Length: 401
Image (cartoon, rainbow, N blue to C red):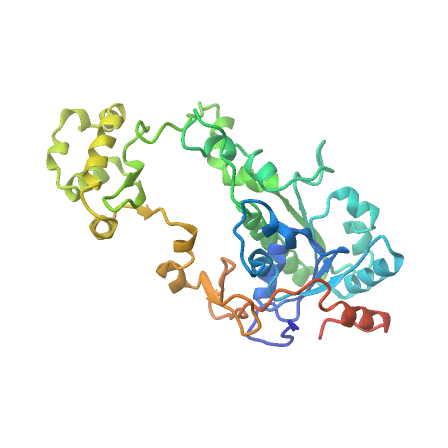
C-alpha cells in the first residue's frame, strides 16, 4: 500500500489534507504537486476508476507494461471509489470534506450541481476549505457548463493550434498528451497556495479556480495581445524561406537537428559568421543590415544549411556554446528522458522502492531548504477504499493511515 507520511517536518505541506476529486490530468496535477511536498492526498474515483487509467490504451499511445501516465500524475496518493449517485457515498465524501484543507475538482459544473459538490455546498460543511476548481472554459459565460480537453480548449481555442505548424500551407498541428493540462495544473496549484496563504491570515477558506482556455491564452499571450493591439499576425513561413535565418532549424552532418534563436541581430550575426568561418558574410552587401538579412533570408538559410552540414552536432554544440549563441538540440522523447542537464537539476528524479518505475518526471517547482518525497507508487483502483470507508463509517477520519 502507498502510505502518507504525516508529521514529517521536512516537508512543507506536511499536515495538509487534500481530496483529489478530479479526473484525467490538469486537476490531479495540482494535487500531485501537493503530494510531492508532503500533503496527504486521497483520490476519489468513480465506479470503474478514473478514465485516465485507460489513456495508454488509446491508439497511437506508446505501449508499456506499466501504466506510466497514471504513475506520473497520481503518484503518492490513496484511492477510494465512491458512487456519488448513492446517498451513503455522498455522506462519506462530506465527512472527508469536513476535515480537509483542499478539495480539487474538474468535474463539469452541471455534475457538481447534481451531486451537491459546488463551493457553496461544501464550504457550508467546512468554512476553512480551499475549493480548487478547474474548468475547461471558465466558471461563467455561455459555454461554462461545457466540457473540454486540453487539445480542444487550451490548444485549439488559444490560437496555438493555428500558429504552431511547420508552415501555413499544411493542416493545423495537434498537441501531445498533457501539453496544456500539466501547465494548467501548475496554475491551479499556485491558486491553491494563494488560498492557503489567505486562510492563514484570515482563517477563512476560499474558492480558487483556473481554466484550460485561460491558460491557453496565457501561453499564447504575446500573439493574442498583438491582435488586441491591432497588429497584423504574421503566418509562420516554411523553414527554407523564414522571416529570419537567425531564428531557424538546422541539420548537422550526422543528421541531428537543432534550433537557433539569435535575437540580437548585429552581435549574433557577427558571432555566426565567425563560428561557421565565413567572415565574408559581414561585408556582403546583401547581409549588411537587419533589413537586408530579412530580405535575403532564403539565401542566408541556404548558406547556413551548407555550413552546418559540414560537422557533427557534438562539434557544433561546443563551437556554438563558446559563442554564447542560444541553440538547443531537437531531442527525441527518449533522449529528453535521459538528458544529463535535466538529471542534474532533478527534473527527472528517482522514485522510492514502492514505485513501479525507477524514475519519474518531477513536478517543476522546488523550494530551497525543503525536501520533496520520493515519488511512491500510484494507487490501484479503490486500493485504500476498504480502510477509508471503514474509518468513515465508524466516525473516524482516515487521514492518518
